[in-house]
Length: 399
Image (cartoon, rainbow, N blue to C red):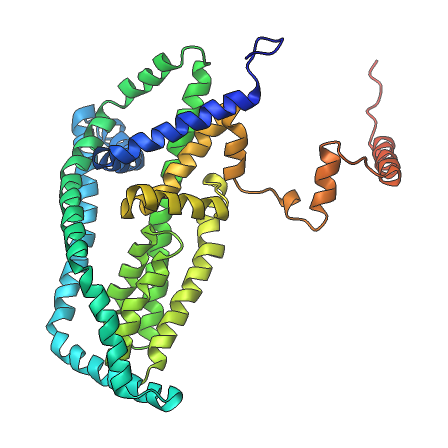
């Protein structure tokens, strides 16, 4: 169906775009064993592009060697982080017997407190714990099989992701020309601008995330050191790495040091203090640190970010939680460039200040011509504009 101008109605264009998007999501879900490593590789290759460009332009390496060196740098950084986590876990594991004894003492005190506060006998508490434990054990087989399946996919990703990154860096100009050939009816400058914007958004997100993780690790560690918690650097860094899971990472990361504080300290106030400090750090990260470092380069409003994280978890599991925000930011750039999807891109973005004011509803209705502006306000604006014109300095006539 076409109107008199020969164009299809906007509702049909929007419906077809959304239908195509749904088909793409379904295809990604079916092929996620290949797509997930590829998506990680695309994001990492965009982040590593400045490293490859440094080797090419500054050190005069060939494109293939520069791409290999960029991959090696990424592998070294990730391997160092993994070595630190494994090494510290082994050191903490040596004290496992002593920690276990202190955990049992802590559980004994918790049972005594429950008995004194709620009047529940220890036998009742133990029965309830055993009942919950049996429910968990019923699903242990499923958990183990899922764990082995995820380990297999992780091992496959460890092999595939570096290979994908190398080819994405090495063939980057080849892929760019693919987009020029695919969208011949679109201005090439616009295509180049969209691709550059995607690069900028992904790099800003990844580099900003790394910077924020470093700051959060220092804040977490400082708080744990002030409370006298052992292995402060390990627990603080581990919690910051869990920021890969947006909104919930720091909260999850506070559980392990809180349990450790409960097992190693004489009072439970240290565990409460650990959780409280991590929540303060999370508040600072969300409201001060991230906005000032990442800024408006990755403009996704919190509601859409939460929905994207939930959908990413449903489609790709744990990997989807990590991929959700950079992929949503990329989709916003693409939607902003497509006329039929531009309203969806607008919906994903951050609201402007005018939308958050007290009288925003009235101004919105006036902006779209639903409600007329008051005559007094209109006359006042006309008077102010005329006063500005008369008060502006006049240039002398040039003869």
